[in-house]
Length: 283
Image 1 (tube, rainbow, N blue to C red):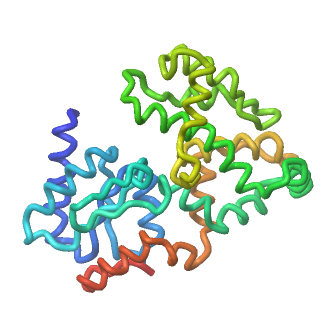
Image 2: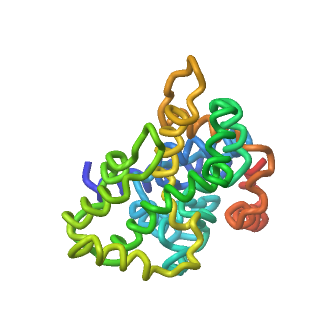
């Protein structure tokens, strides 16, 4: 199916559902987002429509909001680089995550602590935190930011190569839970991110130092690094690796009631509900 056909099919689904569904309709980027918001909302109060990515979501949202007759439609997408680039989306009823994406928003809450209680070896966790002098959340974030700063350079230079998942997955020492920085930098120099490693390191040092690390750290990188830690340095005896998708679902289930209430996203959705209370869906 072409991108145009995907867009048409999403729009058609929403237009067809609106007359027969009394609740809110939310456009989201992917299925994991749909699963989260469906679980986060009151039962039966929302229908989530995945759009196969951010670009399609924006296009679909714009198309569906061209007519005032289609009410009760809201969209939520990952901020990606919006906060760092200071991008302002002017489309009505389109909201972005407080951090780079949904995963990073969840990992910033006490849900991570509950997940660690359930899955990590407490003695190994305490030893790791004592060794590195910080709590696990900060250690996880610092490792993901190493990739995030490189992703930012790539984003700003409009280079012809993609920042592939393998750059992350092949450059983490799983036994020591460390980023193989030298190997990673050499690989990205070969790809064309900089003419040599010295220049690349200088370019990284020249990036602003006041960037919020939660805007730099990509959720997929964070979840991969979390999975590596739980299957290595923090592994509890007689436990099996469940993978990143299951960990994300467990993180969603561990989210305490009200943990997202202080976020800008939650407040924006509450304001949206106030404007059209017949489509209220938040618990």
